[in-house]
Length: 420
Image (cartoon, rainbow, N blue to C red; front, side, top):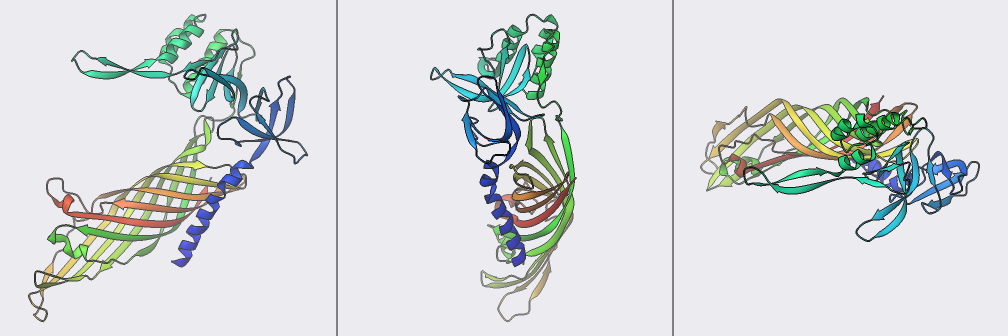
């Protein structure tokens, strides 16, 4: 058990090294000076989270230069992201600032994204950025009820910019305010406009990818009950043993290299099993109660979580958070109670086994942190994870049982994974 906690501490220590790792992550890239000169070297993939400052090192040199959007026309990475300096107007303050905007498509109409907001620019008016957005409007419907509806400002803006291509009008009406939908629309318009120099950035990257893997490890689980009803005093007084057990399964990472290669959706299925026992004794209204209680459980655990990978080359930390469902395969609950009127009287045995006491499905939430070791195209992962399970017992909505008993589980795990 001590070794399990040592491994968890190690995983957490790796994650705390993330800020230093992220700040020093450089990749082959280029910067474009205001005069149009292009300098090639190593560019920080993410130096400043505000998107206003980048780091640059010339090839063969260790000295780092910092540039803001005021100093450059743009920067980028071959075959990957490209950023151009653009003027961002702030309507609320009437101020403007230079920022690095990620360029998605360049052509007769160019498409940009900055902090999750999309902008378009037409070649015949390169100083005018058009923000694509949706607002909400309240209205009274036919039943006299106040409701909300979307005002699609992005459709109006795109219709105005693409009026010279009649075939696009019906497609603009259906466009969604999402990267793939907008990229496809702008590319089609530029082709319709006869633009021979159109460029789509990150085109070699897939919109959707799946990384399968296997996972195994050790888990340490405890169970607890809190009762407000005398029917469950045996559980209130019980101190169950903790249980350390192996766990194993498969996992899938779903992600979009084109949009954000660091963010993914984790789908994981693992087999777990636990056995808890307790022998509580207590006195209630001058009577004596001795109990023998056991839970024998096994479950298929399905976890769904958001995972974020920090920057790194050989070693790459990550964090994840989400929910899980334990689909019970075995849910045995056995309870034998010995009742005595006095301390020395002969006990009367009561068998109170209940095959339906444990819920068929237990829900809960999970958080975890760990690190990948990148080996060629494969990844080894080491993760420390905490899972908090709710309502181990079955809730009966037609009675007061749900109000008279609370139950839950707490699990810490060290998981080793291999992703292909």
